Image 1 (cartoon, each protein chain N blue to C red):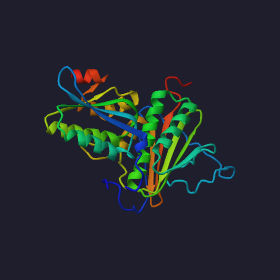
Image 2: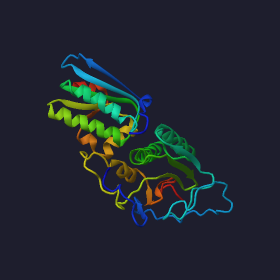
Image 3: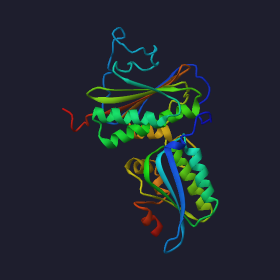
Image 4: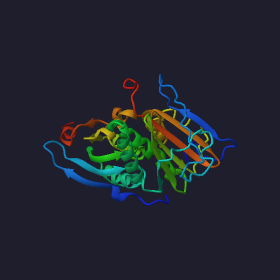
Length: 183
Length: 122
């Protein structure tokens, strides 16, 4: 078991990573619980102020990471994310889902949704992350692991991680309109 | 590990190639290399490294996807080849795989060539 993934912490860890310089945080999208047809367990994730959009696509996975990647790729293309950035998002989600297989004995859930501004992939599983700086420091290439979350932070525009006794949620955001093209 | 290995996702084939110069070992990877099949990939590479070839070339041109587990296995084989005085090189990565090699700086450790023939020419 790698450092950082061990016992249950007393309080949930909540960190926001990989916010690129010069790109302000967007006001979170709010959805009304009352008119949501999606039966998503509440609280969705401590530390995350929003829930997946009502029209999010869901996939429960165990070892079929290829299906996880295929869903992310098709949704990213539908959302209009350029091909290179779609591949980046596929890599990021696959790395996080791989951690589900490595560190938990149970299934994980992927949710994907987008609006005009961004596409978001959320991976939830029963794993516990206790190191709030996980993925922020590049591991040496000789290290037996730890590149996954570091890569996630390199390729995504914004990453949110919350972890507690209820499990871990990792949200990966990709902006659909590049800043220079916006407005 | 408890999960099934994704052997169907990844096909490996191994050949010893008699080139004009030194013969070399060629391992072709086709499909998707991830945590579900990295143990199988490690076994394939370990078996070839154990034969102590002077040159081991991994053809990545058929690989649609590679994650950090597969990268670790390749870097492990690279260290073993180093110890044995041989050279491991990578050939033909498509853009998603090439980008991963750049981001992790693995391309600074392992020579990466556009094609297998470039790799065999060194």
